[in-house]
Image (cartoon, rainbow, N blue to C red; front, side, top):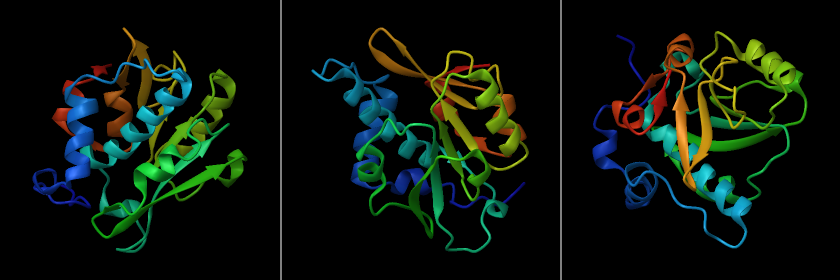
Length: 190
């Protein structure tokens, strides 16, 4: 079994911030988006989910060149998060890995990511990105209705005014990512 970047007791030692976020968004089944600016509220919640994924998914040690390399969350396509994602990860670490956000506007410049949010519903473009990151330890996340069918790992979707998750388990295994049963229990899987 591969040694992962965080120990198995990490969840028990989470900060108050992580526990509160987890209770609100994962175990409560999502947050209804009743705010006046529904889109902003939706992406604020999704930013928190992206951060929480780092707590419930194990990346192999080989995903990092050095023990203190940053954990990179990449965004390709228009950035729908604004400052929400930067605020969610501010000062956070996974083990010795500080979490950073990188925004990409060119497919050829995607490198060094551990998680990649793909903001597009264009099958050809998303397919090109997924092909580019295939075989790497990258968690791919998107909103497109067919995202998982195209090979993406986690898809956000709305159901009853709540943000839900659909997880492509085979895709996560191909990327050598180990997803916690706690996260799998709050998601649809395929």
